[in-house]
Amino acid sequence: MSKADLDWPNLDFGYHKTDYNIRHIWRDGAWDEGVLTSDETIPLHIAATCLHYGQECFEGLKAYETKSGDVVVFRIDENAKRMIRSCQRLHMAPVPEELFIQAVFRVVNANRKYVPPHGTGASLYTRPLVLGAGPRIGVRPAEEYLFLVLVTPVGPYFKTGFKPMALKIEDKYDRAAPCGVGHIKVGGNYAAGLHPSLLARQEGYADALFLDAKEKKYIDECAPANFFGITKDGRYVTPESESILPSITNKSLVTLAEELGLRPERRPMPVEEIFDLVEAGCCGTAAVITPVGSITYGDRKVVYSKDGKPGRYCVALYERLTAIQVGDAPDPYGWVHVIPPE
Ligand code: PLP
Ligand code: COI
Image 1: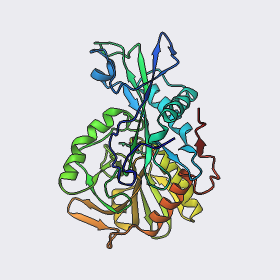
Image 2: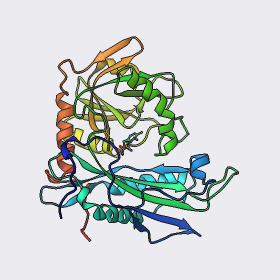
Image 3: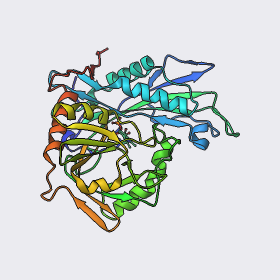
């Protein structure tokens, strides 16, 4: 099958039209069989709960082409489980793990020509979402839900790609509150981060790095990614916080850091620790690993990369992770799943 005519190595992280998306409806207590459609719009009731009360959650994972032409996804079972947790917290009908996986497989198969060729560095970003679609005016959960998966070929999230970026610590705005919904993937968290992220970008930073909302003493995470740092004595430290999203990429890096002889630590990370790190990075499906070159905190700044190059641990982690993800290295952990062609 011939591939779509796209400039694969230069794709941005934007929406690029594909041929199909898939939709399932939950009505009267059950999910339907789902339908593939080319319609890029959805008919939505004007009183749908997703529009008024933010009853919405989503996921993000990537499909890659391997050297042998298989199409694979990374740790899809973890995305399915996280979406169940998001649905439960927002009192939405959870999408069963098997339905989630089959919907992703069906929509990726229907769009195989948009899976970027192996070696281009691009991937097919897969975005499942669940919406409260039924009407309500009182603040109550909907009685009808839409589960939709769209796909779009993408390049790097941060436009520098795998090059150190500058971050700014945000201490005026919060992204998510403790005991709130920061630990699940709901649209409202991103809406809350839009303004501070934009302010950071206007000042020339790649994005904002948020602090814990309660004390403003600990690092939480970046707008679209978890944070990690490497210490002088060989530790991989990443924040533990009830208001950050448990990143599947970060969880994988904890394993890979150990392989590299780093000692992983997941614990509250006082913001002052940034001044003692030798390397730092942001990690996530979209961000992969994006090395952090500098962090500005008020009138202080710490620089990790003086020559514009990523540090050796960021490089080693990036190479190891991406080699497993695209099937260039054996997968000893059972993380990679081949999508059976239909
Ligand atoms: N944190 C936030 C707020 C995110 O949106 C994401 C992206 O999914 C991540 C972290 C990284 O999570 P994952 O590695 O599971 O993609
Ligand atoms: C992802 O990494 O999949 C995300 O959902 C982050 C998003 C803000 C692009």
